[in-house]
Image (cartoon, rainbow, N blue to C red; front, side, top):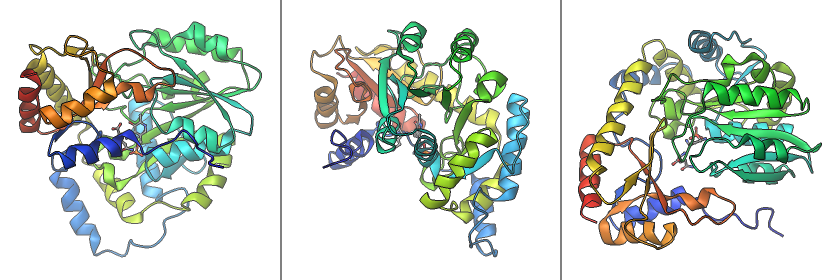
Length: 375
Ligand code: PMP
Ligand code: GLN
């Protein structure tokens, strides 16, 4: 019997393949199509010939762990212990899977907020856990009444994602105040905080769980260098968690990958000394504004985009088709690929929404918007 009977090929692969087949502009899967920073390439070229191609220590290259500690201190005023509280993972995906499988026992419940990133639920199911999927509010803000009502004696974990994929919603300080109040009442509860878009926050500086000591003391916080440095294919991310949780996570990690690609870790470690995260944030703000300006007069309706490199639109004025059918038509008839939002929901939704990725060259965004404006 299949352990994941309802899982099919990820929507990101499906849409990218369809886009390639029909030669459509691919604004579906979330990855940049512009070149990586020349400084990163220069470091890569220089380090390639060095003697750095054997296993790193299991938890990660020590210099990279140090730089992550420095970033966490600079960005969020949190001091972490590099020996006990941080782990380099093969992308955020492996970090999420490993944390869930190390910490969730058979029969324990994990609350997931829909629309939710596609890897959370399968990770819970393979751990033998029970996923409890509850919807975000209409405007994609957390619905704390429903969250609280869903907590039982079996609830082990709450998964949150801020800035949020697919909707671009960000949590406010008051959301975190409310979460603190809820968490206080449930000492068995752990938080998995997926913050892979931490450097792409438009409305206000990113509010990380790192800045909330009562929450971070019970949290696994997930980051991704793939997202932050435009190297999604390198698959390097990291987890930060208190030692009692990290001990368990490392036990699982050593038998999933043991250690992560050494070359990428060396290059990223050096690159972190020169990378300009403010410039990255500024670039994404410009791309968001460009894409929104170009699409504003079309028949698509733009939803707010507070963070991430995704723009959600409603196509209710254009078609009454469901979003899977409409996104296929968009590729085959109009030459643009997007992601239908319904696939991130457990329960059927009749909201007609698509997600466009704007981590693309300006030329790509202009060409795509031109096609969208003709519909
Ligand atoms: N979480 C979210 C919310 C994502 O959008 C992604 C996709 N990048 C991941 C996790 C996985 O990240 P990675 O590519 O580093 O595995
Ligand atoms: N996170 C990326 C997105 O949301 C895709 C990652 C993947 O293809 N698995 O588009």
